[in-house]
Image 1 (cartoon, rainbow, N blue to C red):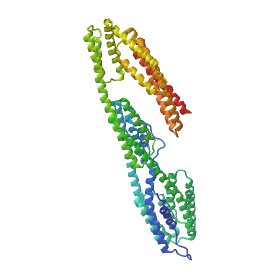
Image 2 (tube, rainbow, N blue to C red):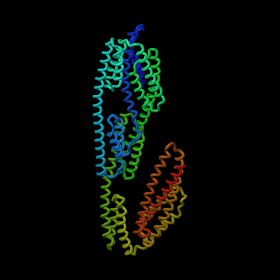
Image 3 (cartoon, rainbow, N blue to C red):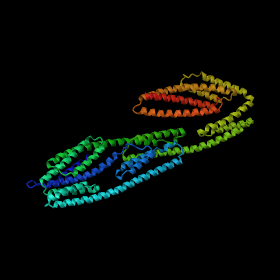
Image 4 (cartoon, rainbow, N blue to C red):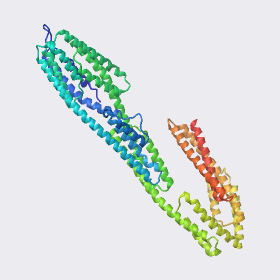
Length: 625
């Protein structure tokens, strides 16, 4: 915004107010000069009004950043009620705009709350009710402001009528040249009454002020006011303008640039209403006032140039966030893990969005619409995927439950060949069926496997001819255990993993072993596998720890703090999962035989979780240092 020097210069014309005709023997003012000042003053006033309107619009944008923003929909509705309770004159359009922006920001992240679950009807109804309530409050605020604006418009029209009447009365006084001693006090009263009257319509302000100036100048020129009154008026005006000058100079040290600029505009309005000072002092005091005003205006211009640069930076950052959300390909996301990972990414981007400042008003509105549309599209796709997946999981559960029922009905059959063929076929069918929900998978799997194991154990007992084969299988599995024992945990990781994979594949091809030896040889096999895997995991943890230590050394600024917060959240989630598994393990131990494979799986998961928790805790210590 350019410095409003034209606005400042307009005040020069106010010096001609109340400039009476000289006493007898004094020189009369130059009419041509008076006319030139008058024309210059009129042009400057008109230019000033235009710039003042522009300044008000820019100043309104300065209130963009709120000191406090409501965190929830309920707080936002409460803030709207507080605004509605104010006097209409105290309701700012900026407050309402920020309130609406806050409401929109809160609802941008709303789909994420579902964590992929089907929308709850009660939650949707509550949200719709909140939106209706918020919209109703905004409508009441708008109506209140409109009624107040109508009252102000009527008041300004009345003010214009009163000001015009005062101007006409001053003109009448100016024409009554024979009653100077009687009319001059009334003339001063009319000036005070004119200045005390409130604002008129902006389109009328310049015209009515110009007519008032003309009437005062006409009174000063036509009436022969004695020098004593004139000098007193000049002195009074000089004192008033000196006070305005001092305040204008103090605004240069005001920290709030917007407050300083607005106060300067008020000082200019007051300056215009004050009459002239002695001719020899007019230029000097005006130049000082103009210089003080230039200081404030330059700071004001610098402030908005800096703000414009910040808005451009925020706009670029928001465009980048929009592009990142739009780049997520929902068609390629398969499985709950992939969707959960993408959801975490969306939530992280939403958090970054809320941390960014404002872009320019139009760009900020357009970018928010773009960002919210991209987020809504993602969460709509996620809801559709989970809805379809739940239907598939339910169908899979029904199919596996039917197989478990059939297996339990067939487990005591002694038709070994026919029933055995059916059990093998059921196992193949089971593997062909997709997954079921986690809360049902273990139970239905245990029913099916218990029935299958019971049948085949009974079949093995009945078929003594297979004992030799089982003994051979036992020898083969023991040989594999010996090969595992011969592997060194210090061997290269790739070679060690390949050897383990080969032994696991061979183990799967070997048939049943004698029942009394089954658990023992399997425990030996599983224990050695776990030992080798733990060695590999320890090596990997060491590598990750070293890599993390290097990453910590390279972290700058707030990166370490954000990583610390993220790891703290992961640690808490791991601990919660550990507590759940330990509770489930206690339940299984109470109902399962010792050595149950499901119990062993839980124990291995618990051990891995404990190792993960220890590793995360160590990383947090590294970050704390």
